[in-house]
Amino acid sequence: MIKGLLRFLLAVIFILSGFVKAVDLVGFSFKMEEYFAPNVFNMPFFEKFALPLSIFVVVLELILGFMLLIKLKLKFTLSALIALCIFFGFLTFYSAYYNVVTDCGCFGDAIKFTPWQSFMKDIVLLVGLIAVFILYRKDFKKKDAYSYSAKKETGNKFKYILLGVFSVAMILVGAHGIVHEPVIDFRDYKIGTDLRAEKAKIAKNPSQYKTFYSLKNSKTGEVLKVNQDDYIKKTEYWAEGSPWKIEEGKNESVLVKEGYKSEIAKFKLEDTTGTDLTQQIINAPKAILIFTYYPQNVSPELIKQLETKVKTQGTPAVYGVSTLPNTFKSIKNLMMDATAIKTIARSNPFVLVLENGKIVDKQPAKDYLK
View 1 (tube, rainbow, N blue to C red):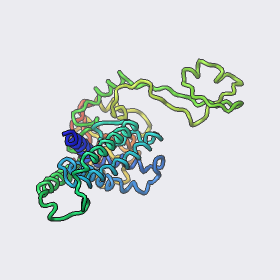
View 2: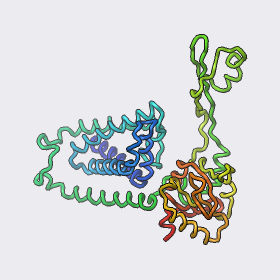
View 3: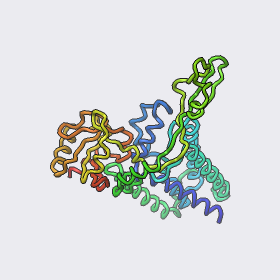
View 4: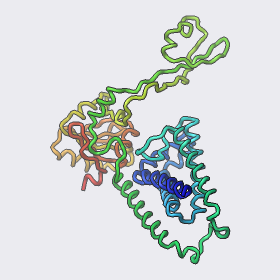
């Protein structure tokens, strides 16, 4: 009873974890790119393979999770999941210890974990898998536990059919997210979100940070971490002739009060001169915005088609938003951070339609042009 319940719970966790990533494979690939970045594992040549690798990892997690659920090839399944947990445990520990990837993307945008929470989650799963392995050890066949035999697997035909149906369903879910947009939107920018209301909540309850200075005593070599308030209060740190000097590049901004959390805090639209037009746009009766986080990969012909269509919609507030100032030729260019654009939608480019600051439509460019 206990071993069956533990196996069921672990299987559900792996399936849910894989599902929320399968829904948004492009988003998970962005997370993989972070691990390949120079400041993490310094393997930028792998960035172009981020999406195929993401698909492989998610498919593996889903299939193994489902095999664990239906108790199919249990010894192989548990061994593979244990290996997978060890691998991800290493990644999450590295991220937490060096504070380089702040969210592992383990549950996509559905559930956010801090780096240390992600590591502890992997440890708990690993312990659970080892416990299930031990509890089921008497059920494993001593011979050919890892091999395939048609005679041996005759009784498992129905399980293989279930696994096939499940796999096809997950492939369709993942393909939809790659070709179009995720079938379920776990992000803060889902259709129906009121950007004005979210901005007001953020302004009413902002996160508070304090700067900690790294000070080094030029006489003794002693190093101190001092917060901004204490630094100002204690004149011995900054008075003329003080041996304490701020170490450049080693200051830290530390969160001291968690405010209202929303990715919409990063929704900031500026023109090419740096003027902030965010409020003007979210207060407009209607605004149509074309976004591209990587304009170099978008054909000029596609941009031209999009510009032509949005200009025929009878909406005065029409803008093109990208990371380069001259991406759009016949509509006004606005600037936005690439990471912030990727958070809104995964397609490159895509079209966002606002009515009084509320998101009423969000489509990949090719769907919008149909």
